[in-house]
Image (tube, rainbow, N blue to C red):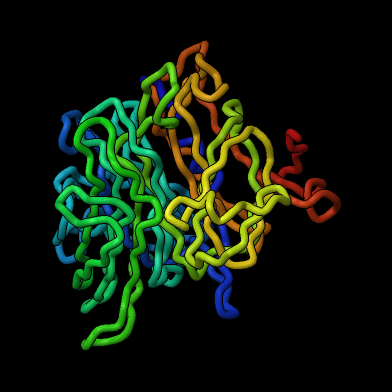
Length: 406
């Protein structure tokens, strides 16, 4: 396999979240992460998890396994990038409850955190959210599950950041350990505990957990507590069928809580691999969703929760109620994309127009497949901005004005 390793993460590295009159971003002082599911945890090979930490100010930081080992501490300078490797004994490799596996990043001043789970060319990455941005309700985002390895399950996992957290889980499909679709189950978690759900996968094909509802609820010991939620796939091919190549990658994304969703999204085709799938997820079944000005019929939403479409054009997605949008990148040679360039599947959660900001900090990872003359390393930054003096003409990269490719 060859991989377009991790370039899609550049779309999503900084965003702002506006909720109840407060302005949040992915800069923060406390983050909770999981070593989420990757097929090689059970099928062999050696996955790696690497955390990247950066800041625009000098500050002290700590990376630890909550309640256990301190993995790294130190001082990060303004503009510096620190990488931290997570030992493989902190895998989240099955369905159920996990103790002493939660990864906690803390700092004295705000930092940004990105997480990568890699194995050779089967790799994925996510932006990480600080505690103050976490919410109490989420919907899992995955994709039609087809792979070239067994046990490549669709998954989501939940991290409790407070004691006595009660979580209701309604999977959209049957799970590995016997939970049934559309039945609500309850789990009780203490701070640092993780609960992972794996979709039922009898062979290289499996169920898609998109639309599964995860929410923290009040219990006898207190009110709703914030939770962190990650979702994706242990390994997946996109699309699931009618593709001449079988190359597959893991999907790995931290989910945005419903309280941060928006009503308007703009999308652009991915660089050199322009044909993309998109999924629009709605929490309110009555939401009216328009794609490029056309109302999407309610009957087009799978389980009345998500709508999928495919094209190679810019898109405008508008809804009268908040929705979430995911963009997907295909396996090389599929759906009109290049058969030769080293691109493999990936997924990102997009940010709504309501969360636009004018200052972005990002990291180009040094994790990548071997470069060749034919397939040199490529890092892409896709920016959507207004035209005019406050937009394109004022665009700077590292303090230097540049003319974006339009």
